[in-house]
Image (cartoon, rainbow, N blue to C red; front, top):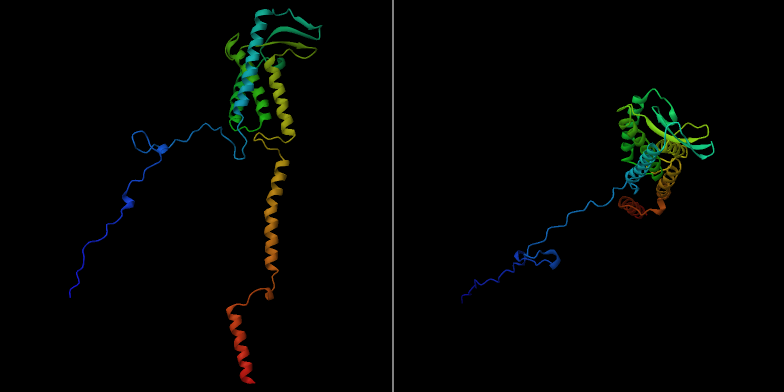
Length: 263
C-alpha cells in the first residue's frame, strides 16, 4: 500500500512584511509618516550647577545707567552756562557745568587719549567677563561699571575738541568733592560693590568661597564613611562564620575514614 504524500503546505503568515498602521497623530494627511519634531533651543543656557548666566542682567543695568547719563548731560549742556552754578542746598550741593579732560572726579587731566583707550579696554573686558557670569550681584556691579565707562567714553569720542580728546561733561558739585556726573558715580559705586563681594567671598560664578567648599566636602565624606564601615565589617568576619569550601570538606572526610580504618 503506497502512502501518498501531499505537497500541500500551510501558507506562511508573513506578518513581518505587513505594514503596521501608525497612529493618527504620527501620520501626515498624505498617509506618510510625519517627520520628527526638531529640538528647540528656546531654553536659556544654564551652568553645570543650574545657575543661569547673567549677561542680560549686566547689559540691562548698563543700558539704564548709560541712558540716564546721556539724558542728564544733554539737559545740563542745554540749560547751564559754565561759571554760573545753580544752588540746590546752599553752597553745599549745586549744579555747575564743567568740561573735564581728565578721568573721574577731574583726575589726570593731561592724559585724555590714554584714558579713552583705558575706557575702551574696560568696556571690552567687562563684556567678555559677563558672558560667563552667574552671580546676580556681580552682574549689577559690572553693569554699573560698564554703563559709566560707556557714558564717559561717548563724551571722549564725540565731544569737542575731537575724537579721543573729547572733554567729559561734569555737573554735580557736593561740598569739597570734585565735580562729577552720573557715569562717575556708577563707576565708583560699581567698583565698591565688586570689592565688597570679593572680600566676603562671593565669586562671579555664583558660589561663595569657604561655605560651598565646606558643604561639598561634608557631602562627599559620607559615601567614604559608609565604604570604610563596610570594609571593616567584611574584614571582621571570622573563619567560623564562613561556609566550608569543597577542599576543606573533602579533607575532613578523608581524615574521618582513616581514623575508622585504624580502629
